[in-house]
Amino acid sequence: MNEKNTFALQCMIRKGRKNRKDQYPVFMRLTVDGRRAEIATNIVVDVNTWNATKGRLSGTMNEVKRTN
Image (tube, rainbow, N blue to C red; front, side, top):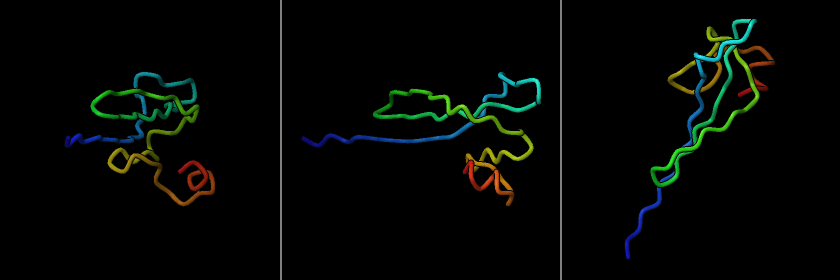
């Protein structure tokens, strides 16, 4: 039997859940064999520092390095 298992992990922000400080929560989307699950990371970020293509923060500050 040739069974193929797939696995993917993607980080993204939820723009619909902005807080009072104009920050957005980061979610991780886990996909295994086509079934998705989203996990809250309890991390909030500024949308201006978020790189959607890479799924991580952009910059060189210590906070950015620690979060990535």
